[in-house]
Length: 143
Length: 260
Ligand code: SF4
Ligand code: SF4
Ligand code: FES
Image 1: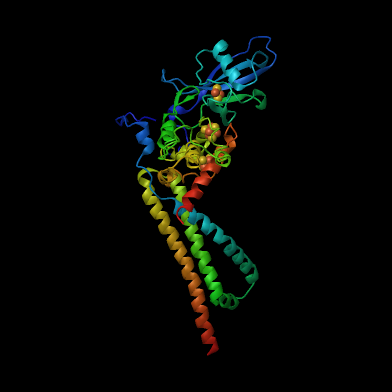
Image 2 (image 1 turned 180 degrees about the horizontal axis):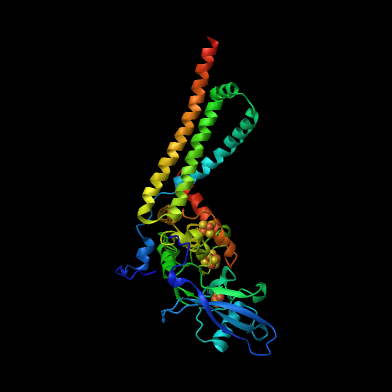
């Protein structure tokens, strides 16, 4: 709706000039492909994780700690955490591109990426803590 | 830009009711969006009671009947009345389609008719498509070849090469698809939309064209091409049964292919 207080901006730029805009950004393929590749990688990782959750249901704390200290499990868990948050960030960026326009676009993307990064890092540190703490505890126990 | 609510001057009010002649036996209501730039009022929906026994089978027949016999101020575009010019594209019963190809009997209850969604309205059912046409123009929708054509004949294609263009040459540029696409609604200033991308792929796929690389360069953009989120509204609504979403998918595949 026109705002009577704001001067009306007359746009005489041609439609073709507006359609061509600033030309092509020469980007988009990487994002598009990374979204798909990470989604495909997450299918087996998530399946594996669900199976492990069922296997560990009702397990005692030391049992879970021992599970978390196995290098294979740590590798799988780290892959899962990193890819999940990487994929989340790609997906949320798409939503921001669709729905946030103008000056808010860049800060919204940065804020989102910062939050997702911190959450992902928190997940990764937790996995590592379990991995390293588990091993130190078992060495203590062995002593 | 996303707008979840209509601006104040676009909220649609109740309009007039044009009752059918007494004795009409087979009456159906046509509820039609009306807006004129000539007065300062909001759009309204007028209701026309139409005797289906008096008119042809298509929605366009009803519109022409209204314009000729009921209310000559009703404004809409049409030309070929056989689904080939693309000018009668509008939103009928919630779906973008061609009025001349849409049988009235396929619609249950009242027939709601609006202009193509999310485009500026010039008057009534006539949308302003200048921006969409300029986007089409921006992809250079013509053959670009540096090799001179044979002096005594046209440029030739094999049967297989020609078959590559099936499902694309049939596009009549009605823009039903682009105006059904949420990505085009939100980002239509930069996203080219399915109609234009189908046209772009039509030339990329043409064996006689020698500028596929330039064409892909021009499309490689986060919004121009990649704002397509594969929602598939375009393919669902195309009144010619074409599949713009598939053409867009092919462009994305080619963008990837040339990176490796
Ligand atoms: S693809 Fe279909 S809906 Fe889109 S412009 Fe062409 S004919 Fe119209
Ligand atoms: S497939 Fe792409 S072009 Fe078609 S409606 Fe969806 S987002 Fe729009
Ligand atoms: S009048 Fe030409 S497509 Fe409907």
